[in-house]
Length: 103
Ligand SMILES: [Zn+2]
Image (cartoon, rainbow, N blue to C red):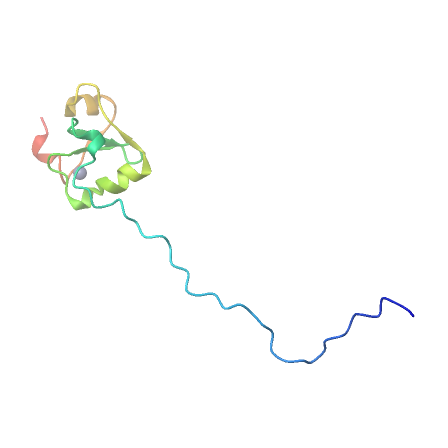
């Protein structure tokens, strides 16, 4: 008896049993609803290192995307928590929330 004649056993035997994948849903974002980040509740000015814009958390709007900034971890706080200090570090006041506080 010879072994090894096993290939070519299935020819035209019908449909491939292909597993069907459901729609791929990305994980929902759940941490974007906070009005103000708890960790920065003692700060007023929050800088975005990517755009070099500083936001006034007392007046931040949805357009400032503070939760997104927090999630990115590309934020900065300032020693003296004042706009002047942020400006010393090269940040520009956000036009949406910090314009009223320009000195
Ligand atoms: Zn802003």
